[in-house]
Amino acid sequence: MATDSARISENRGVGDGYAAGMSQREAEVLEALGAHLSNAQIAGRLHISVRTVESHVSSLLRKFGVADRRELADLAQTVLAPAAGRPAAPVGLPALWTSFVGRAPERDAILTALKTSRLVSLVGPGGVGKTRLAVEIAREAAPSYPSGCAFVDLVPVAEGFVTQAVAALLGVTEEPGQRLDTAVLDHLTEGRWLLVLDNCEHLLAVAAAFAERLLASCPGVTVLATSRERLAAGGERTVPRKPLSPPHDPEDAAEAADRAGEVRMHGTGSPNIDA
Image (cartoon, rainbow, N blue to C red; front, side, top):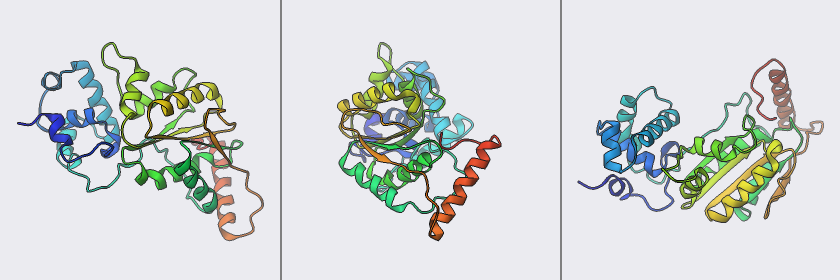
């Protein structure tokens, strides 16, 4: 019988993506779950610790939104089938309360910038719709990044924990004796990835240093950041996100109404989608 790595990768080239942003190791664990192996059996087969298997299982439960390993086992056959060229869906996208209308020129300008710059920052004051626009861009750009697209919300992240936030979203854990930042870089070092760092303004220096190291170590990674200020990182290209002027056409008027709705919902305790 072929090894897990061989079986899983025989129909995939470097840079191909898995559903829900799985890493290859997570795909190996998922296949073993599909074969109804215990955590101890999986650990022995993949030469990793039981604790590492448990971490991968927890990550798979979160990424697929299922309750237990039995459901993961049921998913394995379908999820691990060759994806016929379909890109993996972006992971981490926030739930949004409004539709995306208007602003097509801004969206297209950023999509164009991502083709020529590996670090693009969407900069503007709070409440102008940076997060909403970044979500739309992540969805539009995902087919260009077959390895995966991850949207990291930095609002709840304290200084010094950016790497942990990225690792948690990607389902990356360090092996014994390995640093977490090294594990993240190893995970992203091959293929084409888009990483969105949303709401960087309270972590400017940390986010800039993380982005610079990531881009230097991982040639296939592109970073889109949103912030009230530019990161001041090497190679950064900034795109301003300006407040809406009084609308003169129906699309702008519709977006202005959506923005007003966002502000009202934020004021009544609903999630803030653009700090």
